[in-house]
Image (tube, rainbow, N blue to C red; front, side):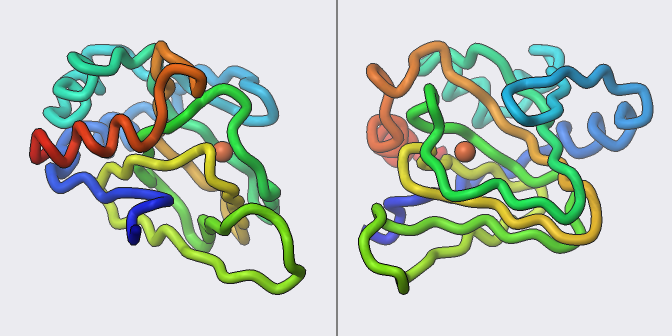
Length: 166
Ligand SMILES: [Fe+2]
């Protein structure tokens, strides 16, 4: 399966990038695990058609911006709670988002998610992934569903998205 790690959502984003640019300098950041996060008002992300459609089927708990500092690595991991997420890059200079299969050998194949602007990706947070960030802070839109990994899997959402041609 080619989309075992992520899936590009065809319907583009139209509002979030502009909201981010306009509000970045007055954003209220909070510490969320090891990240800085800034929650986005529901009416902003709900204005995005794919998110409002997905939200009707799989309730989105919260959505917002997460940032990581320059010259940092977010090491290989699976998310603690989230079975899947919907992500979109907002600002980066040089960073890589990588996936791989479960540990085993020292040398392993990787798959990169090369984020396109204004494009949502369904992201398999239960596949091993890492982010390597270089010279500038990196900002990403991401969301969390009401249901955690026990009840809501990447595959379940992926199947629904394909069926509903989002
Ligand atoms: Fe993650």
